[in-house]
Length: 462
Image (cartoon, rainbow, N blue to C red):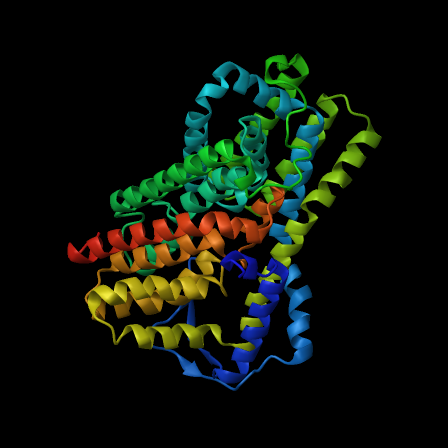
């Protein structure tokens, strides 16, 4: 008898199934739309303005036209994946990453490997909290190099890097795309209630750290139980014994270029409003400067860039492919209809149950609208007044939204950033699901308990 994970289809098949399902929904659900108003440069739904419009079912050809349109819509994310891959490929070709990681592990000692895994989990979680999501894509391969040097596998590397960044970003108390937009819509102090959200985020990262260590101990004791068995570690694994590693003067120069580049990027993000295009530009600058500093000739730099693109191309493809789901929903004009129907269902539930099911509803929407800001602008103007009618404070409604969006991101095949991160670790989506489902369930239960606690204390209004 097959085990549950053997029924998991390939991500391409899974996403195609969602696209077909969404296309069929455009024939079943009536097309509808809320009126929207422009607030701070963003289109926001006007509560109570929903009305049906002329049906716009998605035709057979239109369904397939959604693919190139999805790639066009996701062009910025696709290129940040490609540029991040080129940057990492150049840093790896210069041997800076391998020598630095090998030297650090040599000095700390393998006997501290569990401590290092825990600290890395929190560090990547912190990156998700303060830096963002797609901004951290290029940092994921570094986790792979470190984890493999410690004796782990690529699945553990994805848990440390992609898992922690996803949790940190999704449950961040200062997430501008979910909490920030929610507070603006609710006309509340920006990032108010950060204390309880911080408790949730730290608890979720702690659960992931515990799970990572548990998995690490298991594969050290029984290597045959590794979910990463058979995955290619080319470009990640250290090529010589730990005792032989030293950081050369040239390595220090390349490392300085990398750190300065990251510093400039963070400065631009926090003070100049930089986003994906500027980040891609910085990655390319770092790649070229690192290649020159490592004294690579033009041919080697060019070949390294093309090889790196080949490595990350599947992840970049999946980003555009997943965006096609959103395009189909826009063609069919059913996004607002789904939000309207879900709000009607929630209005019939008791207060405590409605809080949990509000997060469940957001989880369902997240599979079709993986953009946190897009969901916030589409659903929170509806959910916030609905929550007040049900006896939920605005803070609690925003928390329910954040939980539904943030935790689901751990296993959302439509989330381009997650697929890109897994691709950079050479981790297939089906194996990732086998690894992440148990801890995602733990985090979801933990988050619901905190959500119910917020209901019990009437958390809010500020």
